[in-house]
Length: 449
Image 1 (cartoon, rainbow, N blue to C red):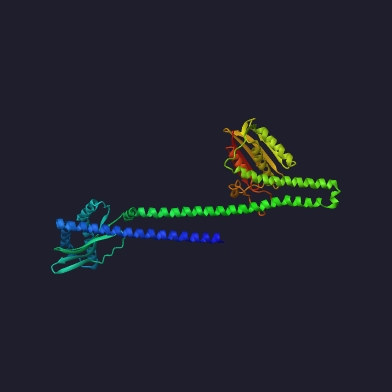
Image 2 (tube, rainbow, N blue to C red):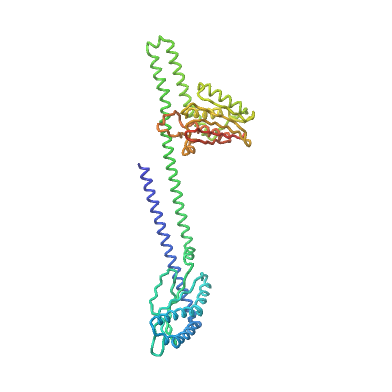
């Protein structure tokens, strides 16, 4: 319960941390964006002031002269010819269109500001934007209003530099000069890159630490479950022979048994058999403990592989009273290998024992050997219940047993395949498994010759 509560609190803290990081990123972005906008606005205005002080010009003189001539043309040649409202609207459109064209074509302010900003080491890749707020034609004391609008900046990339108002012989104009920072997001990102890198790095570190903690927690939980299963299995395995020995010992104490020599021998044999089984269980635990020592070394001897395999199979069938059909297919061609015969024998016996134990029909086993690229390959295939893919990655782990509902359905401590893996690795090789539920399992051991 405490572990689950800790997990929920950790997840909540992680979500809160991510939310805070997003808020910080958003705040930094807005801050950098505002700083960038203020920088270009101030630099543009400073450049405009410098142009006005040096040349007494705002860069639109030529544009205004051309516009004045165009306004005169409208007053004399166009305006008097138009009587209808639609015609007046057409003049408005023509006037605005041509005026914009003249101003963009003839203004010199943009080139000066770009040069001014570039000399100070800042990006000058921007576009000029002109917005006419008012345009009047002047004819004597009469004025014809062609445009009268209130300009509002809608785009975030636009930075307003200045508003100009000029009056010439034939027109009056009020217009805004702006710059369009087309690469504003890129510029903001560059300036905020270091801060973002630190935030992302810290977030990744937190996620990595959380992932490692989560994995360790799940591993601890899994190992705790394996430990509990092992204790339950071990208790069950030990209680069976001990209970039998206890019952047999009490039987020997009865008066009617003492006079029956045959019953005494039968009971003594039972005690001996269960004592051997109990001793085997204890030796299995001790052997696995020994295998985990760092100073563990094999006692290698050169042995003919095919001959040794045949001896192991024959001995196994004898010990289990022919409990399985085993087909031998040896192709090592009398090859000898340096192996620890005792551990090697136990490794093969464990695979054969599992093949018989986990089979719900008459066990049929195929055991074969071959030489492949200076490696000895031993294959043990059975027709047992098989193993699902979810469990094949864990069957070589210590104490791991494939769940079958009731953990005592088949006896064992979850050490047999761990033993196989450990011995194969100690020989410098490896063991792999391929299995299909309901079809059987194939173990392949590879050991360097």
